[in-house]
Length: 484
Image (cartoon, rainbow, N blue to C red; front, side):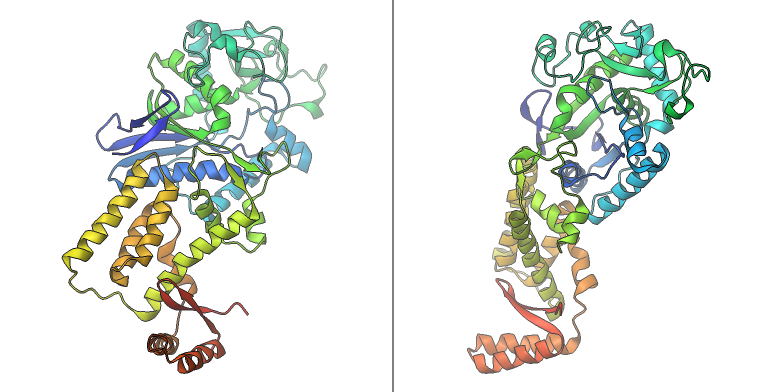
């Protein structure tokens, strides 16, 4: 049974669904005012692997990842500019065009890194009604109050505020906010709905400069405005997954504010406790031992990886060389090592295709036991809090094992249902080894086994003249298309 570290309880626990073999899972997706960086994609890959593991174990997963296209302000204090409006000014496009462009870029990058498609990708701009309704409920229950710039949640009315961090509300007061809003009852109070104009006043052409008007705003019972960042996830997850979610994922940076606020507003609105049964968070990716972030300008995009000549899936492999709860320091040397590790797997898959060893013979009990042992090692690694470094090690152990290549191939393809390295497509997409090359490769291998190195080299040279190169691997020699 899968066991995960639950941020809520601070323990590794067995993960069970509220309905038999059926999980609900929500992931906080990107804010689409700029490109997602490879630190963001580490979290999304963690979630992707978790979804794959649950499905690998025979479960149905209702998987929702939002796209934040309004309401995420540059300051955690609910003050300052909306990130979409900031992107609009930066690029001279409308906020709507910014949202579409970077949503499309995110979806393109997600496909390149082979992330499974969520069942739904809801956007806050499509769910204003649901958010307004939830704010209404919170106001009616006495959790929401009005000040000049919006409607705020009164955190003093939640005895569990800060439960996700393990801190008390008083301990979260200092350092959690960039700016101070003196009208808030408590420093930790947060915006449910923000007014475009003070005290909900609508736009007045006599008083307001139309050029400074927000591009994204909607009418509400309290005046023209837009939703707070946190209410978005609560309203959309409730609509599509119900009042309680089995698993909620995100980056560790979301724990102290965004996810803390999601919990108290959802539980206050619905009366259901806990809002999420299992919280799973991925740790930061570092660059030169600093957190990778857009604000620091020390981030890389997936396209930067491609521009350096790396397969995007080498980055996916790189993520799996470290446990998701550990800091991962990005270096080009580390990515190159991951790329070589992935290439070793590719070369084995090419070899299997090239020498056509996919026919099956009856296996001895010894080899059947070995296959079963390898499969158990792999599943044990997965179930041990998604220990992907161990899972990757099983792949290479399989390649070096003494079971037949055809059975190795099948086992590795089974494992790749979780790893998501696209191994099924390797032979199809980039090997296309002609029959004559396969025959020459067999001859080269046979001569080498017989220690007739002169004839072995002659066969190798003939292969190279035909536009292929021979690479020796622990699994044997393989031919790959020459890059020249």
